[in-house]
Length: 406
Image 1 (tube, helix red, strand yellow):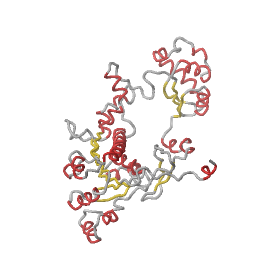
Image 2: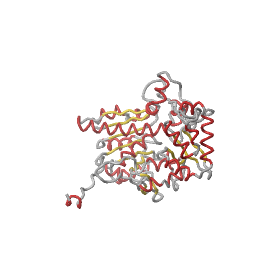
Image 3: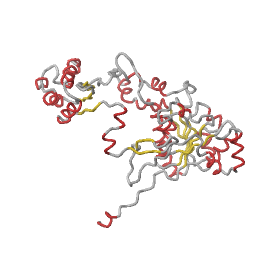
Image 4: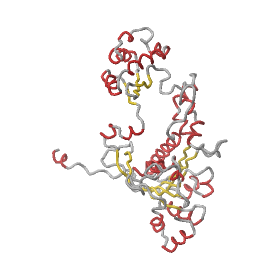
């Protein structure tokens, strides 16, 4: 046993090492899905337009001159810039697909089919290929042709209706529909790879933003469909639990507090608010009473926490065994002590130099880390990839001259 302890087993290779993914992708949904595959060791070849590439490259310049969306969703990929409207560009993709395991696309509705890059066409031509179509609303139905940007789908899926304040609905602060679709596409690819390992055959995977976000709406949807009222918009407050909200502290911070039962309320009253009589007062003693008298409940909690600095308020709540959190902004998240203590930050290369990036949340046993590769420049790998599919330097030069490759 001592010998084994001195010589731990070598780290396992990344789980998707040896898998090749070709992606004709843009914006967030498909790129975020394929980034998960790249982090797990897959080779991801990102096919981009010659005239500017993935349009997410132009969203902003906040990441050291690069677009923050693009940096987030595209590390670890090879960029191949092609004009797919030219038959020569399309032929390059077909050559790549002959040796690929996975194809992912999220082009506008009908565009992939016109190019022969829809899942049904590709899976008929390449029986081992797993082909993923990501769309806004799915391939059929009255919404199939509608434009499907993230915020629009948040509205269609009802997310906006349950988010915000009583006076005003608001969208989520992140692209929730895109992320939901991306993660279902990612898990769909993994499931299809397992199935292919058994049957030897690939097949189509279909994901829509609306289906994905509607699934995430499961709790309020089931609550409403089966006899309840639609949940009220309550800002940071909980619609049926009190106190459960953010409260200002003396130094300008905010503390989120969640009391889950009446025992916790008594501890809050005694140990944090230093008003033990509130613990048994009929106006506050039960959750039903506290919800019925929410304004008075919140006012009592706000007075107590408003007299304390944020650190002291959190310390008292922790000592009392109560669930609490600091309401952080994004700069505070970037310096979060828990992320730092667990060494979750790494650096990835990019055309503008090293950039900070979080390790992906998925940690697998067997040692080794996610393969967090560089963020590619547009067309950075075009020459190497064209040579890899058998093109000569003269043929490559002709494609570049004609604007078919960049």
